[in-house]
Amino acid sequence: MDTNGSLALRFLGVGNAQAVELGSAAAVLERDGAPLLLIDCGQEALSAYLERYASVPMALFLTHAHLDHIGGLERLFYRVLFDAERRGRVKLHVAADLVPVLQQRIASYPSPLAEGGANFWDAFQLIPVDRGFWLAGFWFDVFAVRHHLPRTAFGIALRGSFLFSGDTRPIPELVAHHADGAELIAHDCGVQGNPSHTGLDDLMREYPANTRARMILYHYAGSDDRRVFAQAGLRVAIAGEAVALAPAMAAMQAATLAQHGGRVR
View 1 (cartoon, helix red, strand yellow):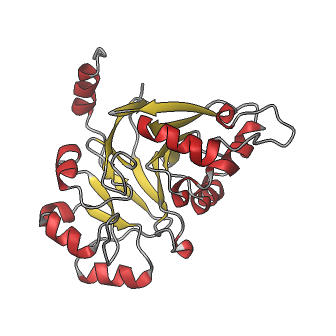
View 2: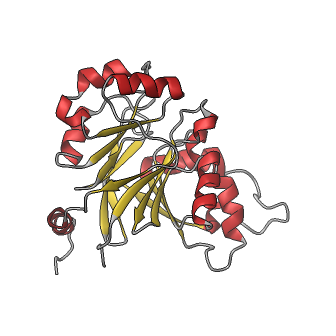
């Protein structure tokens, strides 16, 4: 598959669960300005996606099952189910550990259509993942992060281009493993940390300066947070902003393909 083209990561929303005015934390990987993968689907994120791209997302990755990250799925279900061209073709990449959680939180509602005849998953192509997944010729690494209970939240990385932490406490060992080059690192951060989220003090303590220099922070509480981060010399994501990415490393993509049992051509 052709993986040429310029890549960018566009932040549809950057707020935490209570910062509705900043939009649900979510991002889109774009290639040549076209959406390739939506990361998370909160209510505000889906609205922002539809407004920007004038169509439903055809591929999604969900980091975890808190409603500010999956609350748009029910509305997406209705949009897709009645679209004959897209029904059953929207790829929903979900860590295998999250599938039963999603089933309980959103898919088990009895008879999603009042007239019956449809299951929630009929609208999607559910793709359970473990170490990662292929999409459009790219291999995306998937890894468990530190948010609430073990293996309930996951980050994603495209080698050479970006790492998106999802909601998490500091994960320096995972960042070093999955983004050890020039990758942009989109990292959860608020001014004050807590048992489920990274705070500014955590970030400054756990990551070296050269790693922080590649970071862009999201999932914060408001404009006051942005000013605090800027004073600390840190870059902050703004809703609607697109950040140009380095090309995915072809050599690493080929090596990963071989590692996963494929054949390099």
